[in-house]
Length: 70
Image 1 (cartoon, rainbow, N blue to C red):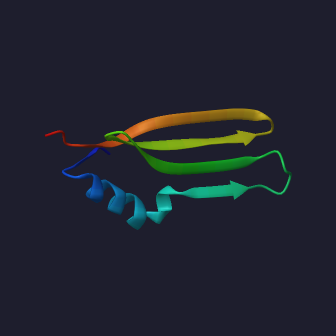
Image 2 (cartoon, rainbow, N blue to C red):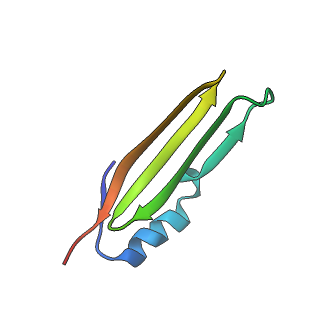
């Protein structure tokens, strides 16, 4: 999925309307968790995901969109 936005306002509106891109889940054990969120970094829309499972920590960042330069 890659999205091209014409303006910064369109990108911010996309973040605001897509609440399923922001999540956090903790397991009952206390050591396991999962998270994800989207942020605007300059002219790029970046999806950050990560978590911990039995002490094994992982994180990733994926560019899912950009603002068209003029």
